[in-house]
Length: 397
Image (spheres, rainbow, N blue to C red):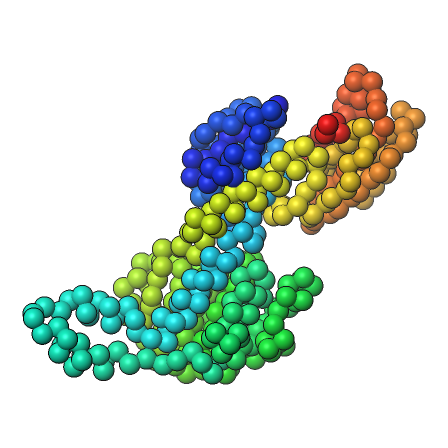
């Protein structure tokens, strides 16, 4: 039976997928000593000691900046997230933000709520001229990043419902995502082509060394004067100081973001939301269900999907036993593993190896073995230099 520590902020519908026959769930913000899995949402683990028994961490959401990924990999802990579960929720908020960027709805509403007297209708008719906006129909939307969220935004904005001309850029677009994109979307060859003629620009890229401050002063200078910038990706993919400077000189008309900072929240041309892109009941439930399913799959079969620390590694489990090894990605590791098995006169039923930077993951399926002999083999595997973790998994019944 696997021990799971689950945060109370994770949607109950997800936690409920841990069946009582194979799992015991406790609630808390850090893993108990015996926990094999830790299921969290927003708790910060950077100062938390991770037990040697911990096999996996599941983040019921997309971002994993609250998890010490390097430390987890070094300890052989596989980290999962839910990359697309909240995509629709974020998409809908971005579309709403586009409408807000075109029409001064929030200032107009604030003004109306401040009216006093018995002639409200007269005041409304006289004052509404101050809140004339524009329309999205026929305007150009530039989408940087056409992944789960960016692709949905691009498709919706280019539909007849919005009628926008959409230009998108993503050098790392996946095949499945590309197939789902509307043929109305124009594919730019670089970021500059997106920025130069777009009335609205929305960015949807993960935060990496390459994307940090991707929209800096040089990039913003290429944007169309009077354009609106939307950021519902990560706060650090833009240069905040450069944005404020562009707003102050009138080059940018407005900045709408899901990431509030002290310098942004009081700027008259900035609209900040409190990081609510994925904060819908449906998104939180979908995220919890998705990450629990991937955690269970890993714990019960060793298969990895949607991990942020290891590549997808999936193999049909048709043999009685499976060995899984997390190890450093150095030469001859697979050879050393097969040498151990050869010394015990064992045949490999099936095998797969996937690497991801400095670390790799190997699964080896074997025929049935006597328990003591199997344990000796697992111990030998664990003694191989650069092996971090070895697991023995029996074929699920």
